[in-house]
Image (tube, rainbow, N blue to C red; front, side):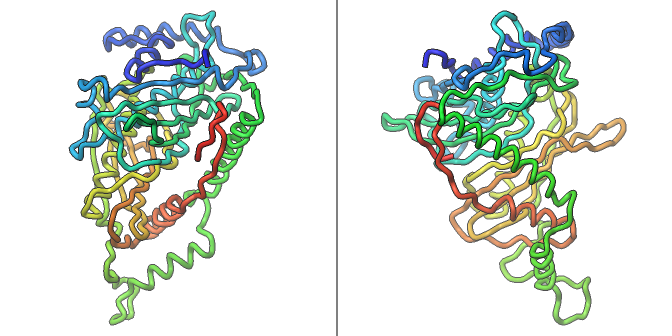
Length: 412
């Protein structure tokens, strides 16, 4: 389609800077952002004021030429001679933002008055285990659903190997539109559906939204566990009681088990200006890469072998991370089953002056290894809730086949 935006992956962030008028120079960055406040006059007062856009309007295709440009490989290469998945997460985040700006672009304005930020990563499903470091990678994506101020974008990644492109992953991101100062929600263009296939894709977006609301309402942080969940936790507790004593305090591990307390890993990042996004906050892709790498290391140390990523679920961006923050990352193996490991990474910022901790993100990663692994066993009530949360996240969903915008069948 002639409306598809084609580009290489590494100029994507430069294109985003042009769209919002951000400076590449840290010294000039504050001034450039201050100038954005005047763009508020171009914001729509209702969604009805904005022209409807089609899915094709936001279609983007980006290429990462690892095969034809060897100089690029160093940034993406890991020591297993594969591609660093954390770098792919960074590229997906940048591309999702560009897709949403493509949907909301007003060619009469030189700069966009919208601040589009990542709200959550709904799902990333891996389609193959190995991403080759010396073969070109193709990213494609477009808007699949819109609300009044939020946008769902789906992306597909494939890699050229032996002369043909094969699937690597499918990703679903949800972005929100804010005003130029990123203080309040802003309206976005409605979506015009042009075919039964597009209506099916949009309907899946509605289903995804409903599921997210239901999961949020049923969160164990808000409601008590269900009866079968309570029974499961009580049985886990009974299995760890020392039968030689009649005491609830005396706990022993059953064979081939590990206390959850002993399946943790922690990290710290000082958030430097180099990792800023176009709005002068820490780039969401950087946070995802750091969380993934800590989660991978946690799974690797727990299993005693190299884990393979199976899926990424429910990455929630609760609040932005400011430049200069101390970012604390905490990874926990919270559930295991057979050869699968469910890891939860929690990130928070510490204000060294007030000593206040604020949660910024929660990440869920599912890994697989090539051997059976120990069971993790909770001791405290809080750990038991993490265990149940991990178990519900790890439950496999039945893959569904949906047509994409351009009439090609693929599993999502």
